[in-house]
Image 1 (cartoon, helix red, strand yellow):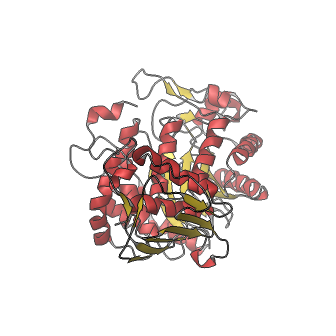
Image 2: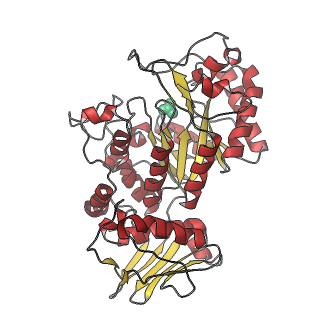
Length: 467
Ligand code: ACM
C-alpha cells in the first residue's frame, strides 16, 4: 500500500510496535537519518526514540551494499525490531519514508494522537528506483513562495521519494535570489507594482542563508535542489534593475503581465551572467544548474551563442547545465516541454533528457474538466492518469512535473494542484513496473495520508486568493 510501490515486498507474520521503550541504533554516518526519523515521528506519536547502542531499530549505512545503487534501501521488520540498510544517506532517507508509510496513517499528523498502536507490519522490502531523476519544478518567480512553503514541498517530495526540486528563481515578473555584486536584482527586480491591473504590489526575495537552509533541509531528505536562472529571455525583472544589460537598453518596470516579453539579455550581459552564476553555484552545490533558454525573441543565432557560451562556463566550473532548449553542448540536460519531437531529437543527439511535456506534467493546468475546478492555465486538463502515463522514451533520465504560478498564489491552492498528481509521478518513475490500476488501489489509503498531512482534497475558489 506504499506510494511509490517498492520493488519487492514480502509480508512476514509478525510486526513490531514502536513504544516509549523503543530506541534506535546507528552505524557511523547514519545519525542524521535517525534524528530525522525521530523528528518526523515525534509530533504525532510523542515517542522519544533515543539513539543508543542497543536499539531495536537499526539504521545502517554500508557502502558495500552496492546492489542497492545510489538510492535503494533494504528494510526488514519482524517481532525483534526494524533493520534499515542502504549504501547511501539518500537510500536511508527513502527507507525512513517507507517506515512512515508502514505505520498507521495517524503517524503523519502534525499534532499528538493518542490511543494508536504504532505497529509496523512484518515485511522484507528491497527497493530501488527505476529512474534517477524524479523531479518537481516550483515557480517562485511569478508568485513568491515563502521559505516554509518551499520546505513543506521538500517534505512532501521526500515522502514520495521524489529527489530533484527545480526552483524557478527568476522570470519577467520577479527575481528572488540575492547576488551581492548586483544588489538591485532583488531590491528592484524582486517587486512588481501590480499584477494584471489588480493594483496590488507583489514581491519577495530569499536571503542567501534561507537558500542555504533549503539546500541543507533538502539534502537531509535525499532531495537536491536545481536552481534556475532564466536567460536570455524571461529576464525582464533583471532588466528592470539593470536596463543596460538588455538587447535594447530601455528602462522598463518589472513586468506586471503574463506571457512572452520581448525583453532579453544581450550578448554584452555574459559577464554579468557569469557573476550571477558564480553566486548560484556557490549557494547550490548540486550537479545541475538550469539556464532557462525558452521563449526568447532574440534572433536564433544570438540566442544560440548566448546559451552555448553560458553552458560552456557552467561546464568549466565542473557543473552540468540544463535548459528548456538545447544549449549547443551535448552534455547539457534537455527538458522537452513542447512536443515529442523535441525529446526524440535530443535523444538522437545523445543528450541527457528529463521529460517535461506540458500535456502530461504541467500542474498549472486544471486537474479535471469539472467546472468547479479553480481557474488555471487554459487549454488543457492534466489528470493524475495523464501524469502517470508521461511518455518515457528509452534512455531518458526521468521526468518532472512543473508548477507554474501565474494562476496560483496561496499555499493550499499549490498543494491542491500538486497532489495527488505528484504521487502519480512518483509512482510511475520509481516503480519498476508501474501499473495505473494498482496505483489507484493504493491511492485509496494514500489519500488518507495526504489528508493527515492537511493537503486539501478540494479547493474552494475563495481560498485560492489567500496565502
Ligand atoms: C516553458 O513552459 N516555457 C518552459
